[in-house]
Image 1: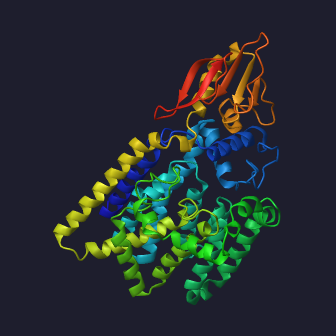
Image 2: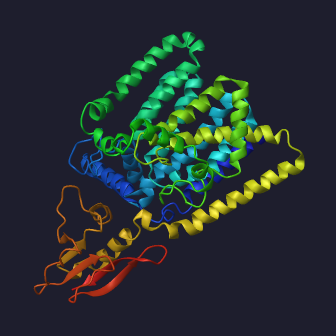
Image 3: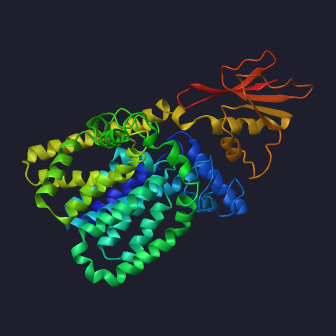
Length: 482
């Protein structure tokens, strides 16, 4: 077996360990979008309809933002195999994050015809904080990134029909890909226009098939009001000030050194917040990689740089930027730049400096993994709505003893429906929602009742029988008998 093959196998093993180790415990809980994906997949498996009763929809209404369908349908498959649980909803993303290593390796090998750059790029994707963060939870963008990467690779391999199908799949997976994918396709055509003529007979059928496949999405998303809900509410045009200034400011912020190399996205679901989206040691390798590609003036360099520039458009078009999730499509491009720069350095530096570079690489990796696997699930448990699953598990163990169960509105209904579970379209039964800040639930009237409410809730008639705590030990809900 070749050394390069052994290295690739080891990288894949490392990738799998990083993405599947304690997958349901870190992050510590399903956040509400994951819960909605899981419940809609459960509903489709059970009834052939989404939670709102629409049969095999192209867009899932969910919370009213209309989710794209691919990840939900992928979760229906994993639920068929593994059941209704947290692992099933995270499996498609973890699997996509693992397969992305192979896609990155073969893409870079196709672009640069060098094993070293391909292996380093795949290794950098494997251990990237940006990649790992979104591979361990049910983020649609992570699957879309795999599809885009495969689409680019297969385009370069002249497998145009399959390439365009992967690009279409990306559009059905994540809203940011709706904007970026057509532009990346246009970039591919522009960069390779001189060699497209011999492909003409294959290009036209691929384009026609692409348009046919995305038509149901286009008619449901673009030609109706459904797709405009989130786009309208989070559009940068809603920001005060000049739209042009806001867009440029948003776009440039995605290249901020503080965001990329020092503190990252400050949303607790998007990073550990103490490190950048990229490792600090990648700062010089990325600049050197950029220099190398600009100096060579190759189609590969044009493609990688253009890919990054396009992938940062989706976060720039919203009110929150930089945004690691919406900008995730740029991640592979950054890692390729870093790999090009690293190979340039490794082939020119003396042995001592190469050893020092490896030591810095290893130290940074250990620091990040310690932060992510040890501190992160405790420090940011609240960002992942921790405590809902545990609350339902306890209530299920005692609910037969009670006639009514009153739930504070802080406990999102999607978690009750998912973890009980309550069949789609069915009433909540003995569960009644109330607002703890406005009025207490009605009196027991001779019947036994439970209350699920935040720890600050008080009622002289109620006694705490269980306190639910998040991963770090902070109370999140009390269960009261009254």
